[in-house]
Image (cartoon, rainbow, N blue to C red; front, side, top):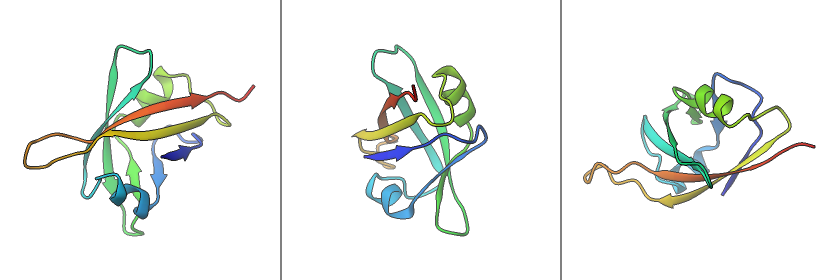
Length: 100
C-alpha cells in the first residue's frame, strides 16, 4: 500500500521499490478504482531516469474527478496483479482521506 499526497495535476512520483513490488515494471497503464464509484481511470505509468515511476496520462482526470486537493491522502492497494502475457493491467483500489 502506498500513500500519495496530491500536489500536482500533471503527474505523481512513486518509488521504484513500490512500483516493482506492485507489478509496474515498464511504461504501461494501470487501472485506478475508488470504492463506491462505478467508474475507473486508466492512468499511464512512465519510468524516469531517476528510477521513479510516474503516474502521468490520466492522472489529472483522476485528481479532478475525485476532487483530490493538496493535503488529502490517497492510498493505493493492489487488488489485481498485472500480467503482460495475459494482457491484464495492474488494478489498484484508491482510498481517499480528506484534509478537514
